[in-house]
Image (cartoon, rainbow, N blue to C red; front, side):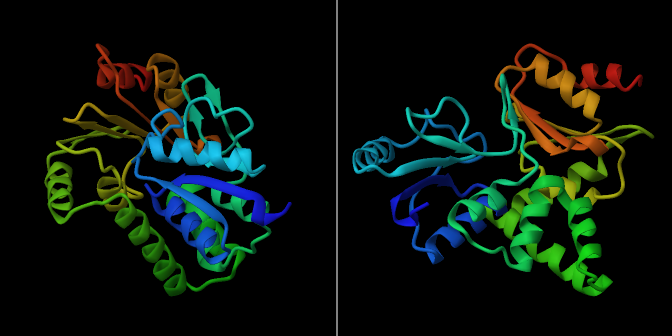
Length: 261
């Protein structure tokens, strides 16, 4: 494919999206950046971006959108590996890997770790490190670098870090579920601190967003209950995630019932 005739629309709302944007810039691929955060969609693209897409379509560009929910414009294609409400875009390759293949870019070691992080968080990065024969110290440095970029891309503030620390201290902990209650929904502030210390994790945020990490069967059930929710991760090994904005539904009660708590 002619890279000079490709247009890619992407948000920069996590570490993977940040790396994709960097690669596209270095490879001189025509790119439009939407300022949307998590939950970015085709429908909520800025008016000027929608206009640019039409302009490039008229110039016979191939249009691709990175992790944009909803129906793509006619002729445009999705690059994704997540599941959304009524739209299963599961793919064994991460969005970063798909973009790299599309533009014939060879991923660096760091980029491979970014990809692994997006597919299955720290466990997937540890698996990758083993295949690369990295030392414990090299692995830890790479994981810290990837997680730092991910958190920075999400716009996490020092205040949000403090809120997470306090919420963790006040967590409700049982053998099969840890429940966190906090004002914001930047779950990386919790997941990074609690990695390896929970079987299932439920984060209830005052902004209305709810996130669950763990058991695949719970994620499947929640996905069917909450319209507009999203999910992904390594579901085959109960290392997946689910998020959404439930209306008139007690998610905590639902999760505890599903886990027989």
